[in-house]
Image (tube, rainbow, N blue to C red; front, side):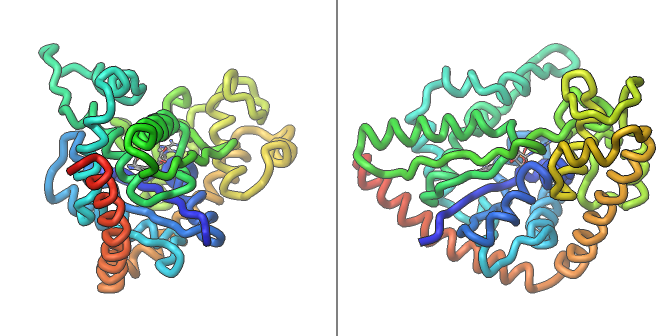
Length: 330
Ligand code: TYM
């Protein structure tokens, strides 16, 4: 039997090059040998302020982008989280087996809970705290082996393992214990304007991230204006040269080249040469993705794929939830 993987992107905004390099590209590569589950994490998107219309558009865009990036419905079950009701159901059960302390220790929670409104009052939705138990449910419903993600999700998958082990110990074998797959290079693509920060779709400065749907000329300009340094050497040294190292990482992952080969290629060259090469490879990728996206976004083919994905996912999820309910005495 093929091993199984699952992953997802939260639809809080535009899908970025960081999401592509950290997660989507890995998943596309995995689908040759693994059974893939890839969903649109729309329930997770409710944890940050949203407009219903925009949310709806983001959900459809995300699903179309998964396919446009190369996920194949023959090997991947693609679905929308809110259409498989068991995610929220199991999320509740798991939240009752997780402590407040565990959730409050999550780095992402600490980062987000620190944001205060202008008058100093805190308005943090409870969902920001309980988000990791919903994510654990997403994973544990499907008996997956591997969860390919970027580095920022590692802690959530460790928590998933802890909850699963705790429940297996208490009630008998229910869940398969998953492991994360995090790449050596590309697990944290940095902001182009502030390379000490993660590239994020929720960044307030659009010049810092590249959306997969950015016009290619806009993307080229963003790369041209990426922050580098004054050392004038193309070297992979994230600590002392974070901007240059970030550009090298993007290049190395998209070209499928080792970091040392990339360094050799740009040895003695100025940063302009590096930026042009990075822009070329990024724009080639965006052009392919956007051409595929245009054909899919308004197609009934996309609806059919999502319907089939929902049916396949629901079947497995309902069996697992029934087992959980039985084991815990519901
Ligand atoms: P999200 O939407 O923040 O990010 C989606 C995926 O992209 C990765 N990622 C990055 N990788 C490299 N560089 C970056 N700058 C970068 N930014 C984001 C993330 O690590 C992630 O793999 N909670 C998840 C979504 C989720 C999920 C799941 C994932 C919900 N349920 C179950 C796996 C399994 C999230 O918000 O990712």
